[in-house]
View 1 (cartoon, protein in one colour):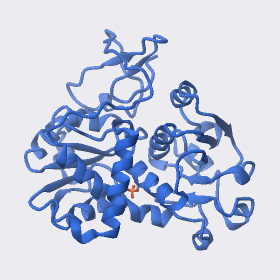
View 2 (view 1 turned 180 degrees about the vertical axis):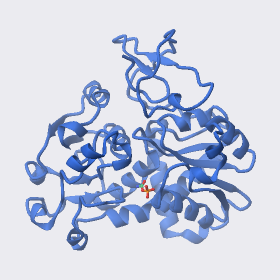
View 3 (view 1 turned 90 degrees about the vertical axis):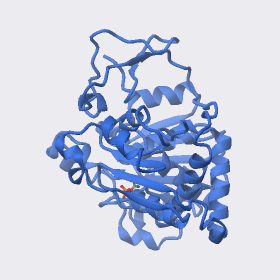
View 4 (view 1 turned 45 degrees about the horizontal axis):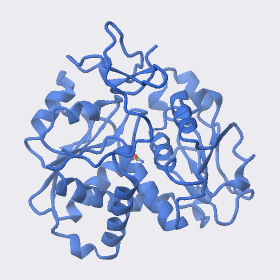
Amino acid sequence: MRHLLSILDLTVEEIEELLTTAEDILDHPDKYQDACRNKILAALFFEPSTRTRLSFESAMLGLGGRVLGFHDAASSSTRKGESVADTISIVSGYADIIAMRHPKEGAPLVASQHTRVPIINAGDGGHHHPTQTLADLLTIRREMGRFDGLTIGVCGDLKFGRTVHSLMEAMSRYKGVRFILISPKELAVPSVMLEELDRNGVPYLECQSLEEHMGELDILYMTRVQRERFASEEEYQRLKDSYILDSDKLRGAGERMIVMHPLPRVNEIDPQVDEDPRACYFRQAFYGRYIRMALILKLLRERGEAPATPDKGHPAYPVNQLPGAVCKNPHCITTTEQGLKQIFLRNPENGECRCFYCESKAE
Ligand code: CP
């Protein structure tokens, strides 16, 4: 069964194929209007969403299919204590494909163990958001015409920003890509991700100033400081306005740089920037519908096939259960899902162990 849990579940060639299909749908939507006739998408959103949920629904409707689901966990039997595993066992009997968003990291992986149909991760906690990344890649291809040799500034909440984590994984596979990681120290990229960049030989620089490297950037990827992931409201209030992009700050940028943002924005991009031709975040959201159409088509077509060998970029980790060890990440699905065993994977190169579900390091 093919699922999309992480962007690394797709090879570079498969991503290329999806982007090409999405562009063909953009140019010839009528050709695809019956492609999913009699197919049903379940959109299970245990966490709020505007773009991802509605673009998935719009994508399936545009393919001639139908949609069911919920947009609030409180209106589902999750409220009564039903597990992710049981919810998915049931819903996979009602639909042909499932797109799910969940606040707990690793929830889509649990879903993939209990489903009869493909699972698409529409965002799990601060972990992954692979379909946002596909929309980002389509945007970069259409706006820049290439992936190689880009300097990408990523700014804001790089600790909890799942869109950032998936984008970094995706772009690390292209030649000559360099990252400028702009965040307050408290919201820096997790060390496991920096180690991944080191392992793959991807150059990066961490800094706290939005302006300092503006002139070097091909892409400035702004992100929201995510109130819902903070343990302390006081800490959120202190950090929420760390970066605000306005027209003055953009004066230091090249004429061909593009400004991206997965949205929603709160205060980090002044609306005056929207008029700047370099601002492409609304086009980015628009493209999301078409890349999700391409993805639905691919996963339904390949439903019975084994996944392509994933170009993961890191060594395979053999399963190694650590008796008595417990994942310490409060956002991990193992903290709430009843009956879920703790599983850790050991890296044979350095002996490091990570949680199978959320990938955080075992302490
Ligand atoms: N970019 C994104 O995931 O937006 P939503 O939260 O509105 O789906």
